[in-house]
Amino acid sequence: MSEKKSRYFIRTFGCQMNESDSERISGMLGQTGAVKAERPEDADLVIVNTCAVREKSEAKLFSYLGRLAQLKKEKNLRIAVVGCVAQLRGWELLEKKAAVDFVLGPDNTAELISLVQEEAAEKHVSTSWTKEWHETSPGLIQRDSPVSAYVTVMEGCDNFCAYCVVPYTRGREKYRPLRSILGEVHDLARKGYLEAQLLGQNVNSYQDPDSGKPFTELLRAVATVEGIEWIRFLTSHPKNFRPEIAEAMAGIRKVCRQLHLPLQSGSNAVLKRMKRGYTREEYLNIISRLRSLMPGIGLSTDIIVGLPGETDQDFEETVEVLRQVRFINIFSFRYSPRPMTAASRLEDSVPKVTKQRRLEEIQRVQKDIQLEDHRRLVGQTMRVLCLGHGQKTPHLFSGRNAGNQVVNFRSDEDSTGRFVEVRITGFGPFSLLGEKTI
Ligand code: SAH
Ligand code: SF4
Ligand code: F3S
Image (cartoon, rainbow, N blue to C red):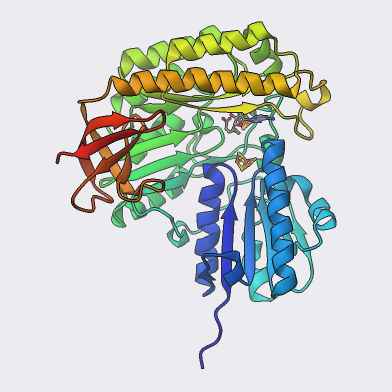
């Protein structure tokens, strides 16, 4: 009789960096012979990869852990909490949630393997940061998509924006050696991947630890890899978005005409309080430069409403910038105070109802912008990288255009993993609808 294989279930909260880390954890566990389960009920190890960026992210985690604790009463189960909340809360998590067995910060997830192999019975917490880049074997990563791959190029953040907990969860910036990044991208090309998304909390400040080469050189190097056709990167910071980066983007055919550039606020007073290191005018200058070099570039952003002291006038200035720039997409959030941050020492002065009203207004304004801009695209034909069936639209295929807009389309044949031409026939606020022509 064969030995019973251990089965794990992994639940991921948070950003692309966490999604990428979960793919790496799956790869490492796969090496030990463990098999991925579709539901926690079918697993003997549940890994929860966590996000600490807003109060709500932590609240979601705690309610999920409550459900897992229930399940643990019914079956043999070990629970590992990894990622940003693990780093931030450490032992506190074990005290609050007795069902949790292991707590591992972002730099400590590899320890999961020995904990699983040794069938450790003791509770275990590990939240130390490594100073240097810690190499994992990229060949092991078990990726969710066969078409588009995340490639981590740096980790951590040195910016300490006043509201943000990330520098306390991910630690200081550290950069992955260029040769190691290229090794992974070559491997992806061999496996048939068409798109590489370079990831980091602050990618623009990338510097090859071996040669000192900057981010623009990284882009050029990745673009030489045959087979990889589209390159995207995130997240960029306006403060570090030097003119050379826009020029490099424009000069490299494979770099998608798309940029996620978090604005956070359109008010100079608020930007200053946020310690963002740029003004509204400087941000708008970057946008103009990008548009003059790359007309039609798809721009997206992040907005926080309700920072302590944000007035109606400050808020209106943010709305103005949205109307001026016309982003293809925004991610907007109500400010919530986070532990250790500078802003958490200020009074959280904007009432929740006001934050909610501002959030709704900003989302309404942006939705109208997207509807208007989508309407103009009807009848146009565009190149789309098909990523598979739509999650919400299983009868349609789904992909993204170079500008990073979601395009759902009808096609008689499975186009997954191919570039197709799609003629736009309809739209919603958050996606375009079309028909494959080639
Ligand atoms: N490194 C990335 C991601 C940071 S977290 C970056 O710099 O853009 C993603 C977004 O969460 C931020 O851009 C910000 O808009 C939002 N965010 C961060 N801290 C927040 C807080 N305390 N309250 C509300 N939103 C927050
Ligand atoms: Fe947070 Fe600012 Fe760093 Fe982004 S740049 S992760 S918002 S501290
Ligand atoms: Fe959240 Fe950590 Fe990402 S706090 S946004 S998972 S870096």
